[in-house]
Image (tube, rainbow, N blue to C red; front, side, top):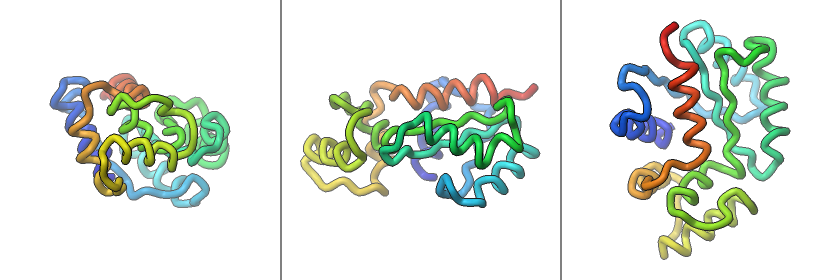
Length: 159
């Protein structure tokens, strides 16, 4: 939650996302958790758009996208007019890897990425440090963060 909150604020400061966009971040849930559908139904009624951000945890991103759509989204927004599903592959640390300009950021496992990040940092990586590291290293916008910006700017505007 903190990573997304701080990234959205940074995107607003860089004028990549309108400062008028009101962003709410739910508690994290697993892809197979029934709470996701409840959160989604409530959010669809209250907001112009919903972005679902999920780690692939090494699974094929298109399969994760399909599963989330089939299990949680299709009965709520079958045409994906208000919902954007973004799969971080293999995990959100890919964004940090890209921001640090490390090679092979979208290959291997999350543990591989963490080892590469740690070797560059010369320190132990802690997940709670991800928001701060992203802010410090965000010289280039990771590819999947472009998807978040696009979703907010295109789908999340007042109609």
